[in-house]
Amino acid sequence: MYKQQARVEGRKTGSQILMLRLKVPAGGEFSAALWNAICEASDRFADGSLRLTTRQGVQFHHVAPAKLGELVRFLKQDYPRRDQEISTLGACGDDNRNTMCGVADDLDPELPLASRELAFRIASELAPQSSAYYQIFLTDELGRIEQALEPEEPLYGPQYLPRKFKVGIAHPRDNSVDLLTQDVGFLPVVENGAVARQYDLYSGGGLGTTHGMPHTRALLGLYLGRVPREQVVDATRAILILQKENGERKDRRLARWKYTIRRLGVDAVRAALRERFELDLRDADPQPLPPNRFFHGWHEQHGGKLFLGIPVANGRVRDADGVSLRSAVGEIASELDAGVRVTGNQDLVIAHIPAERRDWVDALLERRGVPPAESVSTFRRQAFGCPALPTCGLAMTHAEHAIPGLADAVEQAGLGDVDVVLRMAGCPNHCSRPPSAEIGITGYGKNAHMIRVGGSREGTRLAEVLYEKVGSEQLVPVLTGLLRAIRDHNPDGLPPGDFLQQTPPEKLREWVGVQE
Image (cartoon, rainbow, N blue to C red; front, side, top):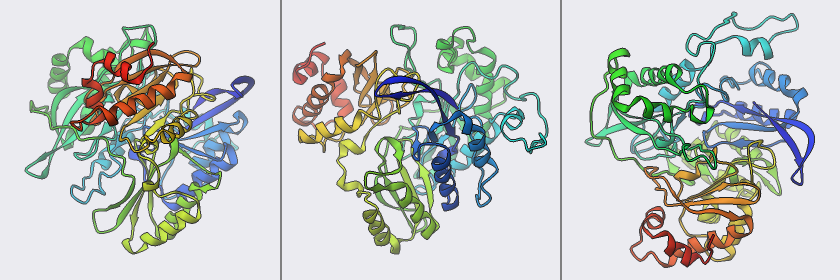
C-alpha cells in the first residue's frame, strides 16, 4: 500500500489517495470467480481499472483512505466464491516482493515445466508471518482475528530487511522475468533436450538508481553456480538471510542486496551458501539466457489446448472508450473455465482454451472492441511504462500517459513495425526496467528525460546513456530518429539492442539529429 497525492491537471489537490497492490505469485491463474472478484473490488473501492505490473502483480488505484480496510477485508474474507486466496500481504515493504515466473512455464508445448510450483513455495515460505496484518485489517466486530497471535517474525525479525527483495524464475525459452535484474534469479537447466533437476542461480541484480549519485548503479545479477531443484527455496531463503544480516541499514540508497553481495564478495557468498547453509551449490558453465518473449496472439499449449496473449496498453485493464477488455476477459474465463495470468510485460495470457472455441473467443473480443494482437503495431505492443505521474509520489514525469502519444507519432512516421522494446519510467527507481531495455526512457526532473540505448533482448546487457537529459518536446524526434536508424542503417540485420550498442553514440546522435 502506498499513499499518493491526488492531482488535477498536474497540480496537487490536497486530497490523499492510496494505491493497493495484490501479491500474485508467478502472475497467478485467476479463475473466472477470482477475476470477477478483483473487478468488483475495483468498481467498489477504486477507479474501476486493474493495473498490471512488471512483477506480474495487480494494483488498485485511487482508493479512498476511508475504504482501505473494507477493500482489504473484501479481498481476504468477503468473497465466498473465490477458489484461491488473494492478499495484499507482502506486496510492498522491506520483504520478499511478488515472486515472478515465466507465464508460459507449464504451458510451453515443447518444454512444459513446473517452476511455478517453486514460485508459489518461495512466496509462501518467505511471506511475513506476524499477525499484525490481521490485527489491523481482519478483526471481526469483537476484535477477534482469523489466525493465532504471532507477535514476531521468525524469518525477518523485528527490523525486516534493509530494503525490498525480489525473486524470479525464468523459462529456458523465455526471460520475460528479466532474470538478471532480480536479487535472486533461477534458470532451469536443459541437457540433451531434456530438463535436468538443476537450476542456474544468479544473484545481485537491481536497476534502481538516484540521479546525481553515481555510486548508485543499475547492476545485473552475478552467476553463483547450480543448485538442485530441491534446494531452490532453501537457496532463496539463505540469500535473504545474508541480506538481513549484512545489508546496509544507514543509507537506504545503498541497502539493496546488489550492493551487499559485491561488498561481501561473490566467493564469500558462495562459501556461506555451501558451508553455513549446506547447499549443494555446484560450479558449472551457465546456460545461455533466452530472450524476453511477449506471447501476443494465439499459441499452442501443452496438452492440446490453446492460450491467448492479449497486449494490454501499459497494463491498464478496464472497460472504457469502446474497448471492454476487463469484461471480455471475465466472459472468456467464465464460459471456457479458462485461467487468466499476468505477464512480466504487463500483458494478459488466457490459458486452457479449447482449440474448437478459438473462433468464439475471437468473435467475442471483436464485439467487445478488443483488437487482435496482429492489428496492433509492433512498437505499440512492445512499449510500456510505469504509472508515474499523476499518481506515483516518486515520479518526476509521465510514463504510462506519455506512451500512447509516442506510439501515435511513431506510427504516423511509418515506423510502427520496427521491432524494438521500449520501456519508460517516471523516476530512477525504474519499475518498468528501462536500463535493461533496447531503448529506455527515465524521468529526470520536470519535463526532462534520460535516454538509454543498447540493452539486449535476453537481458544480459544494460543499456548505456545516449542523452543525459532531453526535454519532453524532444522525445518524439529522438525516438523516431532512433527507429529510423534501426530500420535504415542496420544492413546486417542485427537485433536492435545489438545495433544500438555497437553504433558509436556520436553517430547515433548524428542520425537522430538531436544534440544535448
